[in-house]
Image (tube, rainbow, N blue to C red; front, side):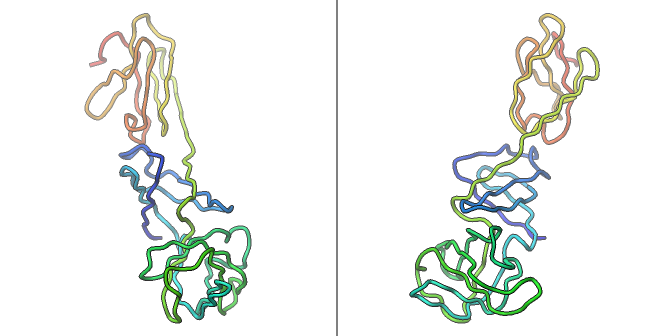
Length: 220
C-alpha cells in the first residue's frame, strides 16, 4: 500500500483526526469508482492509503494520433479486461501536466501478457513517444467523493451519554430544567449547546466516543 493525496474542490471535510481510519468513496463521472482509507485531512487535501489497484505505471509502445489510441509496452493488470470498472480512468504522461481520460479498448486478462490499448478522450499537449512513461489513475478531475456519515448515541444514565460522530449534528435531549449539554474534551468540559440541546461537530468529538453530560453548571 502507498500514500496518495486527493485535492478536493467545492467541499471541506472535518479536519484533525475526525475522519482518520474511515473510508472515502470516489465515484468516477463515467461510472465505477474506488474507495480509500483516510490517513489525514488538511483543508482541501486528503491523504489516503491507496493499494496497488489505485494507480499503475506503464510505458508507451506506440501511439496513433488519428484515433488517439495509445498502446502500452505490457499488460496493465490493474485494468484487466475492459469493462465498467475501467471506464473513465485518468492518464498522465511523464512531463505533461494535462490529465487525460482513457477508455480501455483491448488487452490481456490478469493471467495474460501483452500490450494494452487505451483511447484518449482528447489530443495530448504533445504526442506520446515510444518508451515514454505514463501513470494511470483510478481518480481524476471532476470525480465526486463521499464519506458516509455515522452517529452513535449511548445513554449511560438519565443525564450522561456517550456520543460519536463524523458529521455535524444537533441533539435535543431530555434532562433537568435549565441543564446545558457539556462535552468532555481533552482540555476539559465544553458547553456545546443551549438548554438540553447540543450542537456537535466532528472536530469536537475527535474521531472517538466522548462523554456528554446534561448539567446546569460545568461538571468540574
